[in-house]
Image (cartoon, rainbow, N blue to C red; front, side):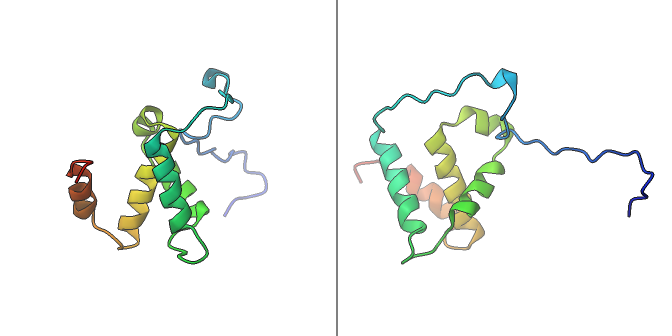
Length: 112
């Protein structure tokens, strides 16, 4: 409990994704571009998982999972790669898949 005369300031918790207003972030590229096939696939998987019929995950959960990505990985990954990492984490968190199952699927050749 804080006293009214307490001069302590609350510490602001900043995460790597919270770059709003930072001058070092640089401008946002708003140019339209065609999505790669794998980006379209990740987008489609998210739409199915978040669909009213499935309700496996919610957009807020995806955002939370992306905010939990380490700073190093967040900076390295592209937008849709962050979605993929977040969806994988949520699938494991919800007990729908194990990390080993995901790794096994990812090791399979694309043509298989």
